Image 1 (cartoon, rainbow, N blue to C red):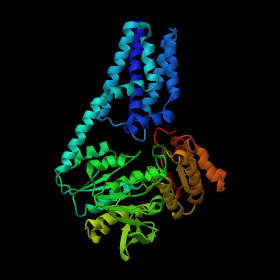
Image 2 (cartoon, rainbow, N blue to C red):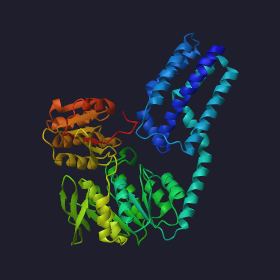
Image 3 (cartoon, one colour):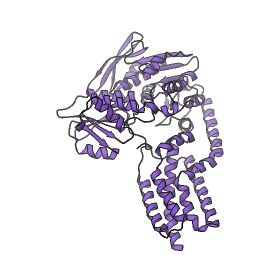
Image 4 (tube, helix red, strand yellow):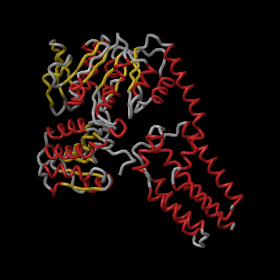
Length: 519
């Protein structure tokens, strides 16, 4: 019995940590929202792993003599596989996560302790049962809820106090189905020519992320605060606006993102425009009317609103004479008939021109001289994973658009690939898993993605299983050559196959990278 315990419980502790860490990681990935986690759980949970653990528990309950051997082997294998797996967005060990782990450990110890006291022969099996499904993590979250609510309210009130202490601070909100992060960075760079500016770092685009930015980074010397606002359901943008009270708002685009939670494109539109509705009557809304759902809506606003576009001649700010060269992009800006020329950037693609137009419109509103704007635009660097371009020592050009996950952005990236000037012998190659979280329109959008790939690429690598049939259907409808289509079950497999065929002069577009919860 002593030997059994010496073997079983250390391995169990390792398995417990591996599984609970995964469950907490996915809970964090879903913004600690039970309803979002529940939707993910139905499609993303590792039921194969859960079945193995449940089977081990059953063997333990019937006191099978081979239980210890089987459990030791499988616990080691499962824990090893889980701990060595890397994720696109790694877990962040915040204080909330640490509290979840502590409560989960205490809860697990209590359950196992009760079983060991009353039915000691079933203690090991009971320990396994609670790991088959995310019972430990969900119970810990339930137990922590009152305490977490008090902590969140204190943080919220502290952030409000800091903002009240800075009445002259200009707050700019940026939201949209795509383009908001790039626009944030470009605007920050341009406004920094004249002002002390703070922007929310990384993907701090939730209420908690904004609160953390205010409490940890906002200082009395800052004059402008740029707040990126993300949303996965109605009310998310309004919640952030109620906290920061922006006076300027940018809506970069409305697309078919997160339709599983928004329900419809109209739901996305209303959510994004919660930012414009939150602006004061003296505020300024800056709106992209190249985004078709916005242009079709013909929305009226209570505040001053200006529009921007690359293609629509009715826009207040419109890009003109856009010229692409291997080293730079030049363009002019038409502001209600008054044309200013001489804008030069190292960025590529129609989407980036749109993002720059939004930044220029806000910079004009805040009286940043055109000369400063042009100097900043010329110096703006590409943002990693957002249509960034680099050339390897082997002469292979990589267009990295891995963070893009929407049809309009993908089309723009494919336009860049299509128009890229190839060296002799080079080929245009796309590597993509398609789009997710689009509800009923997901199959249609991925089929259309196949159409755009066929028109832009010489080779297509379709990664993962979730959208494979739809993308391949779209490729076939445009008579894409079957011998130039490569199917891969994972990005690692696609990379291995790609490495075997790459040659100098190739241009490779990495379009989207599925979240870790999709396979």
